[in-house]
Amino acid sequence: MLNDKIAVVTGGTRGIGLAIVRKFLDNGAKVVLFGSREESVNKAIDILRNENPSYEVSGYYPNLCNDEEVREIFKTIVDKYGRIDILVNNAGVSATTSIEEYTLDDFDKTMDINTKATFVCSKEVVKYMKEEHNGVILNTSSMVSIYGQPRGVAYPASKYAVNGITKSLARELGKYNIRVNAIAPGVTNTDMVANLPKEYIEPLLRTIPLGRVGEPEEVANAFLFLASDLASYITGTILQVDGAAMN
Ligand code: NAD
Image 1: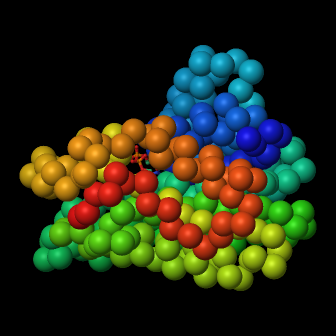
Image 2: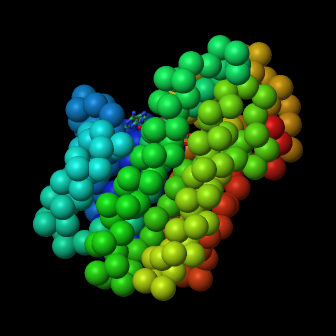
C-alpha cells in the first residue's frame, strides 16, 4: 500500500509509533524514525532489522521543538531519498497532574512535545511536499481531544490543539495536494498507559464497549489507511480508534 514511499515517524521507537513504523515498512515504505535518545533509536532499529533484514529503516533523535535541527535532518533525508511523502507526528507525553499541582514548566513540556513539535515538523516538511505537489501529514491525537479528561489538563489541551492544527493545515495545504489528518486513539496497550495510575485507568476501561484496550497494531492500521491512496479524498478528519470509549 505504500510501495517506495518515504515516511518520517516521530516517536517511532516504541508503542504506537513503533507499530506505525513496522506497518509502513511491511507495506513497502522506507522509514526514518525519530526518537528522543540515540540508544532508543538504535534499539528500535535493531528490533526491526532482526524481524526483517530487508527493512529500509534509519533514525535520528532531534529536539523536535528546534526548527533548525529538524530542518537540517529533513534536508539530509531529502538529499538521500529525493523527497518526504509522509510525515507522522506521533511523539507525545501524557499527564494526570491535578490543576493545583501543575507547574508552568510541566504544562510547557506537554505542550512542547505534543503540540509545538507537531507544528515545527509540519512547517519544515511542507516545502518538500509542495515541490512534489503531493504529501500526507498524520498527527497522533487522542480520544481526550474529544471528551477532555478528569486530570492532567495540559494533555487534552495539547491534543485539542493538534486537532486544530490538523483541520487548519488541511484547509491551507489542500491546494498543494497535501492531505492532513489525525488519528485519535483510545486506551492503547503501550508504556504510556502502563505508567498511568491504576485508579485513573480502571474507571476508563469500564467505559469501553468493545471491552478491552486497543493494541498498537490496531491503531497503526488506521495510519496505514490514511497514509495510503485509499484515503486520497480524506483530509481534515480526526479518526477515532477507541472502541467507542468515553472518558
Ligand atoms: P510511548 O510512551 O510508548 O511512546 C512515546 C514516543 O514518543 C516514544 O517513541 C518517545 O521516544 C517519543 N517521545 C516522548 N517524548 C519525546 C521527546 N521529548 N522528544 C522526542 N520524542 C519523544 O507512548 P504511546 O502510547 O506509543 O504514544 C504515542 C502517541 O499516541 C502519543 O502522541 C500519545 O499522546 C498518543 N496516544 C496514546 C494513547 C495510549 O493509550 N497509549 C492514547 C491516545 C493517544
